[in-house]
Length: 276
Image (cartoon, rainbow, N blue to C red; front, side):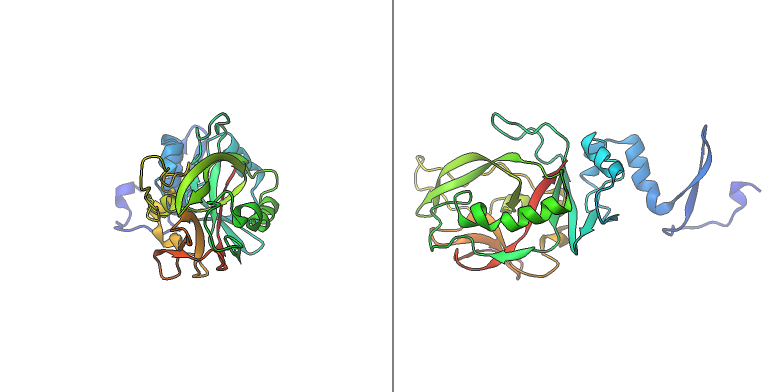
């Protein structure tokens, strides 16, 4: 029977199959796997940053997945794919996001940027009412992220990366006047990572004062392709790194906008980190 003799179809179902003929023999592949397999065979890891899949990857990183991350092929790993560990969804937000970032200690190893679907818990940003400590000098950065660090290290044992980030560490009257390269394993998001632009940015009154600056200046692929995931699955408000004024830190509100909240408010901690 010729191929042309089979009934015609104008659509595909996920359980339909294609026949592959090669030197290794005749095989079949499901429609749901066909597109991703073709891109992996013919493209590069850069193509992967523009395609969302959203597949469940398991309850832990498998040995094969770990190798695929570390050798830079990222085989069968796509934006939006996720692991569920301890009831938490850890979703792939970007590929090699921090590659080349750093001062004297630049990132050179392959990695995935991971965000959680929901905030892990709530915390104050600062124990006082001022934003004078910036982000890196705040209670949240120094102490409030400890629980998140413990949780993600347990979910990805031996894989969470300690990178250097350019972070605000002091401000005066809501204007950033000191930024440092600081090592850490876990951060919270900022507005550029979510939207591609810094919407919560106090502007300096003169050229002697730094504007808001951060080494994480690029929108995460997950939020560019699937902005649905900007909101948390728990629907809550979560902290961002930016200063909104001399008495307010930035946050992504449950209503969907960027807003400023007093440092003593308890808001969601939604971590972002690298595994490799």
